Picture 1 (cartoon, helix red, strand yellow):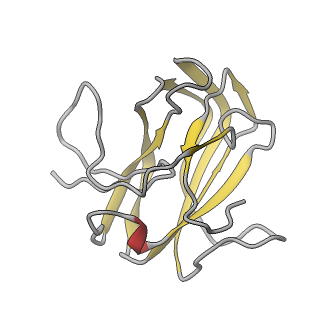
Picture 2 (picture 1 turned 90 degrees about the horizontal axis):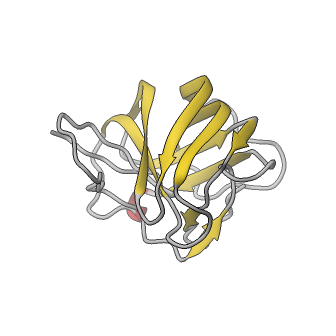
Length: 166
C-alpha cells in the first residue's frame, strides 16, 4: 500500500485498505487558521502551491489517487456537504507561490462532477477519490479546487507557509 498526502489539507493516497478514520501518512504542516474557501463561500475557486519540503516525511514520486481536506474542529458543523460542479486540478510546478492576476493555467483536471456529496466531520479528514490519477514528480505541486454551488459547506484548516494562495 502506498499512501501520499498532499494537503491544505489535502493529501494524497493510494490505499487498498479501509479505515474507520483515514489518517494520511504524508501531511503538510498543521494549519492554525480557518478558511471558508472554496467549500463554504461563493468565492468558489482557489489555487494552492505546496512545496516538496512542506511534507513530512518527504513524499516520493508516484500516482496521487485521493486528496483529503481537514475539516475545522470547531467552526461549522458535521454534515454531508453537497457541491455542484466540484472540480480539482493539479500540476507539477516550479512555482513557490501564487501571484495576483490571472489564474495559473495548464493544470490537469483530476476530478469533475456535476454533483458531489462529501462527509465533513469536524476535526477529521474528508476524502475525495480522484477520477483521474495524477503523476506527482516529487517537486512542487499546484492544486486548484472550485465549485459553483454548495449546501451546506464546511470550513477547512488552512496553512500556506507564508506563501500567497488565491
